Length: 133
Image 1 (cartoon, rainbow, N blue to C red):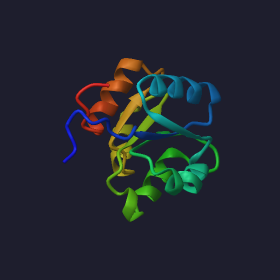
Image 2 (cartoon, rainbow, N blue to C red):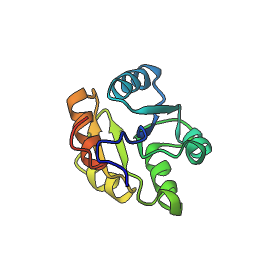
Image 3 (cartoon, helix red, strand yellow):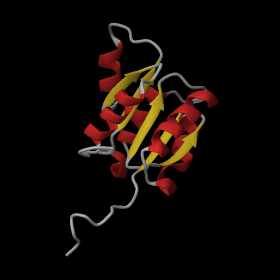
Image 4 (tube, helix red, strand yellow):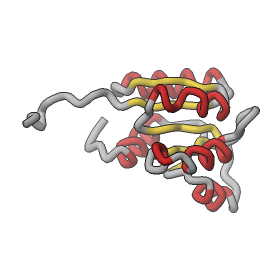
């Protein structure tokens, strides 16, 4: 039997944003908290790398070229292996109808840019059911 104090495998998070500076910020916050991070520049790239990376959680910007966050989340939810994987939406602005569209697309939660590290940590801890990160 494994002891409760036995260290778990680091959690893997896939982030997708067409802004390199946004990806850099997310990566620095996540890696500082012990996560293994993989990056994608758009939704199409997410679909190409997600199975080999096997993330515990996915963070998607809503507005990206080629394949946006909404379409990417919808595609992931149609794949059996990722139906239960938490997906977080990132958006620069939230409209009155956005929360409904975000939920209907299969997102588990959303965060508004600029991202506050404490909000990001709290969201991830809740979705991955982690006591503290």
